[in-house]
Every structure is written in structure tokens, then in C-alpha cells.
Length: 229
Image (cartoon, rainbow, N blue to C red; front, side, top):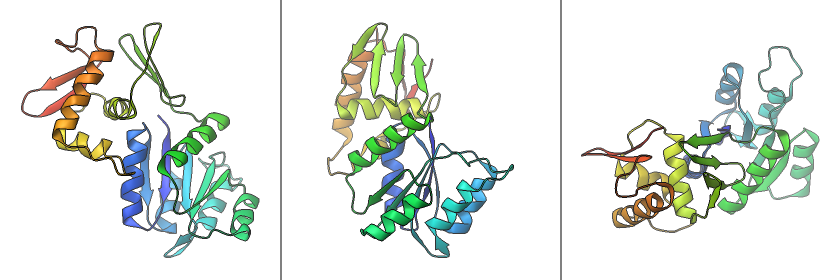
């Protein structure tokens, strides 16, 4: 799975974006300041950096410079950079692209458009998400395609998100509350306990050999669900 560095000082945006990207199969680490971002970059390799321009102690431009620095100890020199900013003007866009950024997205943005653009960049740069395999089930998160054996499965948006949440937390027990939190659609679609029950049943009906005796999405009595394999 692709690992994204999110550099943003607005806690609400961090929470919403982290939930959205996690539900799409990404691993997200966030930093609220320039220094926190630099510290993370010095010790970890990322697949993409999503940077706000305005930060409390500096700017996303400075973080981008650290990423693009041509030094031997730079773990992230080839990592694609996408700026997100409230500055919707040509000068900011040109400055971002001149620094080597791969894209520039103005706030407010449509969540689905953001995810699509990130996936396209990851695919183009060769940092696309890994392919998940559970038994005869194969999920290509970069292409958004699910196969069971040689047969392609057609999942609804929420079914697909739910499956990615499980795959992103393989071998972990997920409570119903955690699942609802993860698949919550920040575009406005409400997901409640009854809705979750319906979608788990529908998803099992498509991916399990015997939905009455599931082997992929298992129920852990009194605790929640777990995907194994």
C-alpha cells in the first residue's frame, strides 16, 4: 500500500483526509508543522507528499525543498509532491510547479477528485499501491479493480471502501464503531449501524465462497470483524 505524508495544520482537514485516504487503502502519516514534516522525512520513506503551503512555522515550499534535495542521505528525493492550498492564484501554482511539484489542488476540493488525482500520480511515478491477495480474491487498489479468481467483481463505492478498510488492517480486529468511522463518506452520506450490517452482508455475498460461513471477513464474537488470509 502507498504511504502518504500529509502536511497540514488544520486538524479537521487532517482528520477528514486521513479517514478518506485510509478508506481508499493508503497509509497516512500527518505533520502539522514544517519541522514535524522534516523530522518524519529524515527517518521514513514515503510514496507521496501532500503539502499545505501555509504552515505555522514555515511553508510547504520549504518541505518540498527538503524532499527534492539531491543528497545521498535523502530517502525521499524521488517522492511526488502535491500542494493543497487556499491560495487559488496563478503565481502560487507556478511557484509550486517550478519547485518540482507534480500537482496543485486548491481548497475547497472534491474528495473523490483528490483521490483520483493522487492515484494517477502514483501510477505514473511507479509508486502505486500494492496488489492485495486473500485466497482467490485479488484487489488492485491503484486501478480500483477486484477479482475473484478470473472473474471481476463489481462493488458499490461503500462495499469497495469497506473491503479496503479490512485489507488495510489485515489480521486486526475492527469494531463496528471503527468500521463506521472509517467508511464515513465525508461528502455527506450517513453510515449507521444498520447500514454497516447491510454492507457487510452484501460484501460477503460477493467475495465469500459461502457467505453463510465466511472465511475472508470473519466475525469475532463480541468484538467485531477481522480479515485474514
